[in-house]
Length: 516
Image (tube, rainbow, N blue to C red):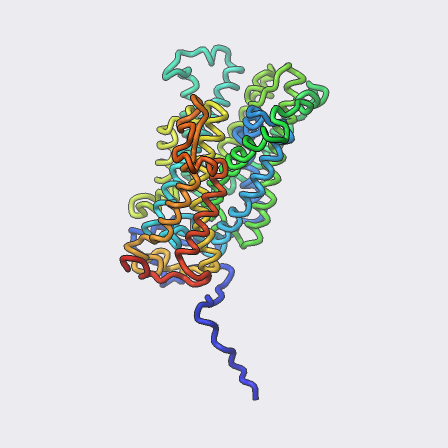
């Protein structure tokens, strides 16, 4: 008679777990050094974001002034419109991969990015990638707020003459500083109400901004009588040897534009109703929206060439050419909604969780959001967007290299080493399997250090156009600098797997040079 008892599984095979996991009532950790209400898993009944919610989130984030200006930055570097749109489309298809991989842990475990990072870096070590991500987000928050403030200042100046000629403070009219501060306060007031308020805001902001962009296209098309001049403008680089040295660092810069979200996307997917919702929503929302928005910016700019005799890449400057008060008001509201939509979702949610992870006893989500707002001003964002070289090569390239390195470690640990299986309660418990050496996993730190040096060690600037030496910080690494995000991700992923051991085998919590 054949036995009906199945054979035991191999020792290194991890047992299957449900698609969605929550903490049992008696298993909720209470150590306030690593736990607060905002960091605990989202209860199963509150994981209710649908495909539409995720699509709307990305539409709302992608339709903003910096996204519009991406194509113009590439054209300013010598590309034609086809090369610029192609570069942006390819970059967003590439970054979608790690976005979906890291986003998987959200619906399954209901945890934010800094808690996911504890599995690979350790309960204390997770503060390293969390603070890097938070610092980047704070800077981005400042950049977006400055751009939004400038947009409001420009449109109000058109409506109220003399607005732009006010007395200057710190090299800018005091009225511009007022717009910046008011816009900053409005953003923090919305996020202070929490994630449910953000979801509701994104749901109606996304279609509103799309309508605004289409209205702008129709308006300029009517005035131009067609979209000819700029679409016929040839590339200054061609497709030969002059193109590729510009293409690859630009591609890495475009990837870096959303590389931030490829890390902390669990901050949003933790509210997802399931994997299908986050996969479909992100796939529909990110690459298609960014590509179409880049194409839209080119078409509108082409129309401005025909109407005004010059290519006006900034949509705010373009709208300011009209004398229609209703049109100016509509544009003002659209700028407000678009910029708030992306800035709150992309640049406040993450550092709020990251800072809460640093000191859960003292910092909650709302406190972290307020700290983000203050730091976003202190980084002087008006300096980071002065030139395309500084914005695309220096800022985006440097950020992309570091964030790619962290993404490589997260993907390696969650997908290759652990096969998506986590001990949820141990992510909050000192002394558990993710405590490693006094809360730090030396393997992750080593992989981050090596991957980071390879990714950004060769950073270089043209003489007089950036902060780095022309030969690179580390000259022999200079050839890698143009591929910083890819180099950082690949190097850290491979090194982390090598240091950890056989794939599918979770490293012992006491393993490492110093034990637990």
